[in-house]
Length: 346
Image 1 (spheres, helix red, strand yellow):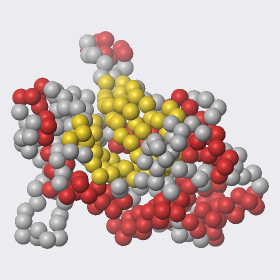
Image 2: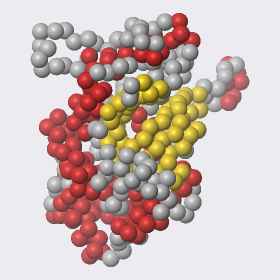
Image 3: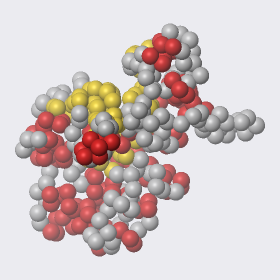
Image 4: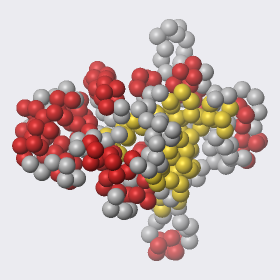
């Protein structure tokens, strides 16, 4: 079965030399204007929301890139762009050497969709309450014509349930009969049904208790080791990110402000926003010190600040920061978009 899934597209490139996933200047703009007649009567212009504004990154095969940032920074929009749920306003997503968004529009797009799957944030909303677990996990297998025989389908669903720590006997149950952590395991099993290579995980543990989070994360790491999976892991929980990622990208108001390997980012964050996020984390050995809260509020994305979007909250901002948008540059092995770091002021 795996040969049927992988062969049509893998000929496009050699995964040993190219990253499996490459986002190039990805952007998504939403028109959130009032209805036309209201705009005419009130003499208001159209309102455009730049949810993602020129994001570029690479993920080598078998590794995990984590995207972090405050709510509303565009992380989930990036996730939906990568799996083809949104069409990009600008830029491309290259998967294994193929322009994924162009491929999704062709008959070969079905073959590519088997290789790219998504785990959604809320296990209470992402599972159909009227379907049994067998129907939920078996749907992608039937949709992609991978298994048509009912006995073989039951066997495969049972194997998938075992792989996420559940029993094959659970396939006759409905989602409401499971806890939140068990539901998320069912979501992971569904995502694994087509034997994908790339999983986009949109805050898969944020709706779960801390102890259950650890179980789900350990299952995901075990599956990555066994099956060589590549992850984009989206989270606002830096403790989770530290546990699962190889590299970390920090997003602010639709743009990446810092991308570094995990050890470098947590040991010596460069961008003022990254420092602010890490300073807000409680530390076991600093019980006598007051935590530094994250200063200020995220600006209105419909009316973002000029220049660097972070400058109203940044203690190092100067006139250049207010006027000129910084580019994501490679500085000492870390990709960073900050005038203060570029000029050596911090």
